[in-house]
Length: 129
Length: 129
DNA sequence: TGACTATTACACGATATCATGTAATGGTAT
DNA sequence: ATACCATTACATGATATCGTGTAATAGTCA
Image (cartoon, rainbow over all chains, first blue to last red):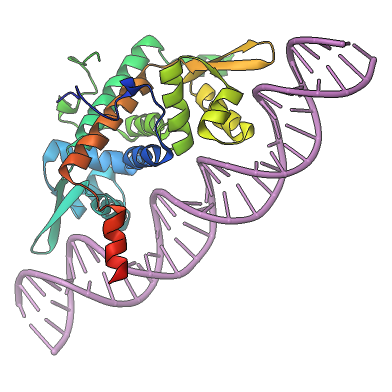
């Protein structure tokens, strides 16, 4: 992953970010605030290119729902599409989301190590008492 | 920033993430999908510790709105609070968000370099035609 | 105690999001 | 042409979110 060494928007700038910048940042993260979109993006990272029905099978959701979310990702240039006969194949277009997803999964696991959640069998033990 | 070298949830695992994992990941990103929260978090990263009225002044919003968002951040253990007389001071509790915010700002700027957006005066040029 | 300040709790209205169902579109094959 | 398949477009209802206003709570100071 490439690092940012010089950035006018770096946190080290010691000045507060503008509402505009915060808004753009929000839009960036907003892409990743849907279970469905995250699973779609993750699948596309793994498999490079998949059509709607492939993705529909993977996430076990209706093709319409998948298509809707893909359309939103296209709007933001996150993914790109290509038609091949009847199928329309999608692939990641903006590598940013790969970095974000990677970091997200990484942080998720670290926090699990530090603050282990209660396991299901423990819950059932409590429920049984 | 610490890197993840071995991770059972790594993208390299070549298996699709579960709905559960995607959900947790979504919750992580959801924290960052509010202009207000992003500005609050950013301010707390810069200044280490600030009370509600400080933050209220910085983001130019009502103390209630600020308090509401801070409460949501407390619920997710993102920030921690400390009372000192009348004021209640908040500080970042979960360093994850610092990494995410940093990467987000970094990616934002890179994408601006690559795909420069239309400037306002250009828009007005078009509007004038 | 009582006045005052800072913060929080809670209900409300406006807005956005998501999955669904139905209908339309684009492409293939007979 | 027409039947068929994959995908998209669009409207809908359920749900979540955000900022606001009002009221309650916690602390300070006289």
